[in-house]
Image (cartoon, rainbow, N blue to C red):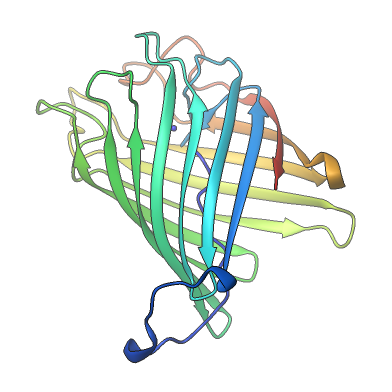
Amino acid sequence: MKKTLIATSIASAVSLSALTLPSVAAAEVSANVGVVSNYFFRGVTQTDDGAAVQGGLDYGHDSGFYAGTWASTVDFGDGTSYELDLYAGYGGSIGDLGYDVGYIYYAYPDGDDLDFGEIYGSLTYSYLTAGLAYTVNSQATGDTAAFDTGDLYYYAGVDVPFGDSGYSGSLYYGYYSFDADSATNELDYGHWSAGLSKDVGDFGSVGFNLEMADISGDHAWADSNSDDLKLWISWSKSF
């Protein structure tokens, strides 16, 4: 599961008396499709290092409210074939400081008790962003289960556009802290990601990305190449 879920909203100061149902004239609906050579969620492949097809639908209102859904193919080796996310939130700014808060539900309709939900929040200043997500509901069972209530993920990064070239670069670090982590059940880990993207106009955008997670040895997520530096490419287009 990593998807970038940062909502861009028009800043507004709304009093309680002004809170009304969104009107169609002040709303916007958009869609996106994409293909990636490897789908990473927080530093861990969700497709056994294979490709994924992805897409979503979003609703945004001038007040700052947004909602949407996003889906991707996955391969966990257990018959689970896709992920379906549902989310809603509110974003805006106070002066030069942007903010975004919301809830996201990660669903795996053909999986076995894999669903979980998070509340999340982030702050953005200029090119810098920092945020966290906290798991508030989950289908996980057992004292050693990951993706259960109480898990915490936090991250910080920078996204920099390179003038009018259409290129932009990013560098992020994230850390996943699991409530069930222990000396005999090592789950916590950190990861780095770096990317270079190019806007190619009507053809969408393409990206070249590097991913590396601090996962090795007896870690619960470890495999033969889990701590290797990995390169993946992407294409996406919004409508």
